[in-house]
Image 1 (cartoon, rainbow, N blue to C red):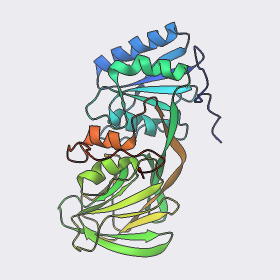
Image 2: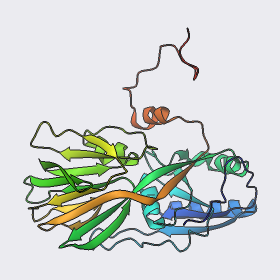
Image 3: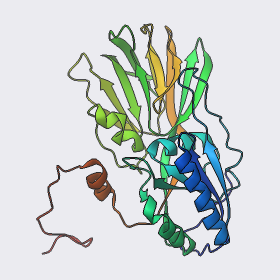
Length: 315
């Protein structure tokens, strides 16, 4: 059972937090900024240190470390970078998740919601207890071959089964809680979480699903059947993807990283994971404002109608 959180909203945290600052190994500038912020936090009475999130080598396929020995002691993890760095950090923390404050030093920053210039004010808000903790679903992916699990991955955005070279369609059989659901003939299938619904799933024409819900989105790529549309289903279930005849280059991909090539008869099992990824939010930015600001959702039109209160529309 995970240890109780010391970081609690509406409780002062002046000078009593253990804070890890995580930076991408790809940027010396971000690493320097992490050192600066660590000194700033120590000056405010906190215990702070820096860590570099490990990355998978796409050429070797070597997995990320599945433990994070420097992070379980932390009350808060401040991630400096973009959404990709947050994804790597969530997978690195694995079953020892610590609340994350995402500071955007990348481009989009859908998860890394705090601008770089506002990090000190965000820390002040946390010290005063003016923040909220928002949990998000993680998933587990098991690849089974001849009845044996050959890979187990923790993910946050999506798991995809992709046809790959020679780029002919493959069949993917979907079973839900052991019951046959359907067979896709397609270029691949994306199984996305709500957090990942605005990533690969959205680019492939899938729906946006509010990120704090517990659900899976199934989105076939270039399906041969017009009736195979994206489906949203409960995260309470276990989903098995069976690939009877993969291509030579077919693969299972988790959060954009190739996990393994697929062979005839492989199963990819997907289910909700026990740990939850937790973001620290200090602003009053609503979910739909984030969609408008970050994804330009709504076509850029400005609201011109009446603004309703929570009590309902005016009588």
